[in-house]
Image (cartoon, rainbow, N blue to C red):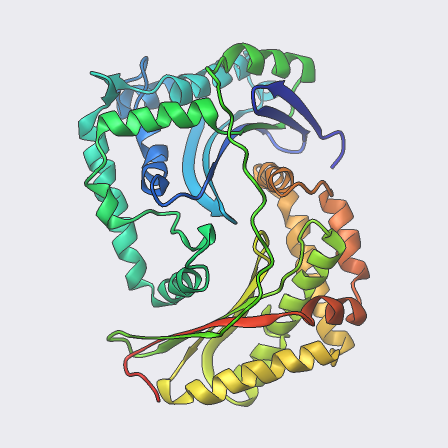
Length: 424
């Protein structure tokens, strides 16, 4: 992918242009960054749905849908997610490429996104209370539903305990006890503030005329901006003073084990970061991995087992579903497999399968519109600038020595176990 350009529009706003002619669609994405903050995280989680509910011109879902139809069925999406210690509120609009239509609509599409995001429906100085109450209940349901997915719940609890004194331990969905404090007025005041003060990235992906789209964006997004927040990089290094062991009881049939490791590695060193990525895959990235083969297949200790890498905190989590009486043996064998990895005992097959899986995943970024937008925003946010092609080259060159170098400082921080009965 070539000719990607980022233009600083001033006042903490960047515009990234990703020309791509193979899709019949254009995508405009707005990424708004906030530091994860316990006092505002619940409000931020509510905002995407509220903003999509109506605007000054289109005050109901019906009116919004009618105008979307007028623009040949454009689709608007919105969400809030956690990326390291940052909460990102995202708005997206996808439209048909003008080349396949009888009229030019891209300017109208961008203006529609501007209308929804920058001119939300406000009544008596606040968001419409009816819409706010509906979305508050929806958020309650989402938060409460996490406990129904015991695997996800265990991962979330392990992160919460491991990063208890760090921003990364804050849930990006927010907290039940904060929902009732939110109303249309204070939520709107908060939204005005984040639109004034947050770093904003606008990313355009598809087929477009560069000069034309830059002018359209500049003329549409006339935001009132002041006191732009500095979003620092997340701390990625912390010495483990004492391993946390957390046992939690719940009425479940299958225990959930999560082990969190700190890797203490700067992800801006992309050679080392992607060596760690390969290491995580060798350890627990699929049927070829050490954990799958030796813990699940050979010893039949678990129903599933995998490892995952959190980029911005360079931490690895190993998650497994086990019977409670297999706890000690499973923990011991997981530690043993990591020691084997650290020793450099990695077969050529393990290494090739892991690199192949990662390279295949990287190539898939360009398979659908939106993949490149998210990728290049993440690169910008992490202050890294390698292209997909450059990263594939890095991964392809990773060897056993590289892996040993990046895993040697991995430290077990937290062992979390959710089960029906605590084991001694």
